[in-house]
Length: 316
Ligand SMILES: C[S@@+](CC[C@H](N)C(=O)[O-])C[C@H]1O[C@@H](n2cnc3c(N)ncnc32)[C@H](O)[C@@H]1O
Image (cartoon, rainbow, N blue to C red; front, side, top):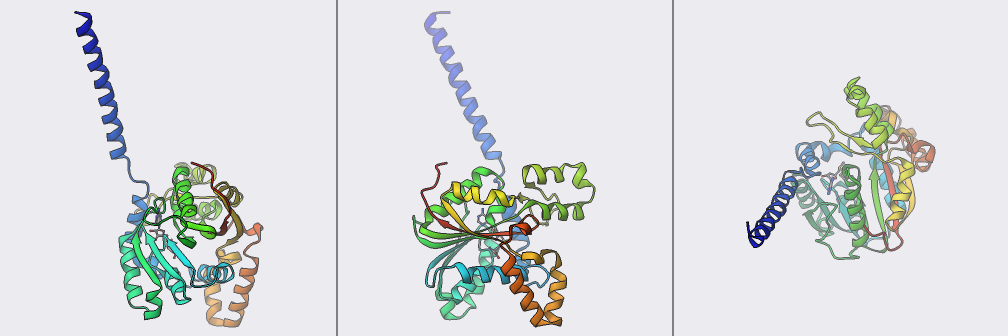
């Protein structure tokens, strides 16, 4: 074989290898499941449940009360511009619009966005006019919005559904980019212990034999194999919260347990609301004033983080 022919064959082989590798990479990325697809599917199927969640006395009612108090305490005055990112059926969008904020709602789930549009269409004209837009968007990609276009970004949901560090970093960087300097980022995260206990209560000894309990404790990873139940997610220890936001150019102003000290007694507290409304109010006052106590954060169902955009964020 001549040296020229040999050279051409070697070149062809090298090209083939490159093409083969490129095809393999393309095939692997094409077949890689979109990490948020399961989250979107879960909310598509449980849209109605999500609409009702914050109103259910033994489920979201305490969270709604304490979050509302935190928003009243920390939000800038209306008509600040708010992005309700992962806003689902629009409960907070409506709450904000009623108070004069100009709100944009984004979410992954078309079913929840449709519900939000219907709810806004049935709201008062003044409230509806404060909702600037409702659109499908992933918290990891807010490219539909220019830099520094919001005074506040609410992100109540996406962070505990983003299971890779890369995705959480993309989401926090996007929030930082669309916030004006000094703007507020309000996020919910989920600590591990409550989820560990609820997993064992739901799945029994399989939680230990399948390694689910270990993954929750050691990797902060929660997978729910039961179709139709709350999807998997990422669990953050309270002591990881501030370093994460500081790394990305935020100063944590407040960290509270979303249900305060009442997370384990929601059914009984709901009954108290009927039996003794005054005691219920006073218990909620107490729950809000103690919700920042770090000694309860590890056993919270959710954590609410209020952070101020403070600096240039770390590069990816
Ligand atoms: C538990 S619901 C909370 C809805 C609303 N924020 C509230 O507090 O009532 C979580 C929401 O986050 C949305 N979500 C989860 N991951 C998301 C992502 N990567 N981008 C945008 N929305 C997301 C879900 O579709 C769902 O509507």
